[in-house]
Image (cartoon, rainbow, N blue to C red; front, side):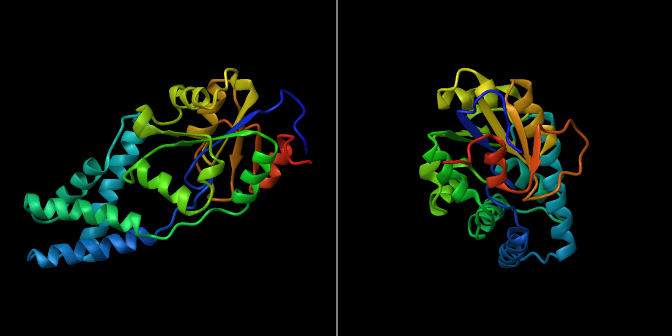
Length: 246
């Protein structure tokens, strides 16, 4: 199926579960690191205590994310620590914050299938590539370094991170700012690929971009308006956009 309409000169991509898959490995490592820090400080903590604390931290972030309120590592860690069955010192608090981030930084990441080949084809076609990412507890500097480590940073013309633009998707500003950074004046000449209807589809559509929902990373269970095109294949997506041929 080939899209026959306005030519696409730029494509923006969501980060998590669109380019790079999420993993629960960091949660397992986080439990280990927090247990070590707390034991060294004289506190005994159960896995149930940690599960409850991390769940509270995540729910805090998720609520603020949905409210489009910028939230940082310290906010989430503080919320989790407050749910522990004891009070920790400022030093232990700082060590737990560092361990929380370390667990994410040291968890191996990998590109989802066809991403590198897709970016290569887009560059051959001289199509601009951007990334639009909602940043949570992992700073954008780390997220950008992962793209470098995975060998695709060179294909990306602009990175639109929420901790720089100060809004999350679906706020139109993060889409508009990214297109501006790409030098795209007319959103109808751009497409956005992401995994979530609430953020990716709604936000991109609100400014007139072609919308694509990628399902190869995870299944979106939430209700919402569907994208112009849905696929679990990145190469299939660029074919739909009319960018696959020679």
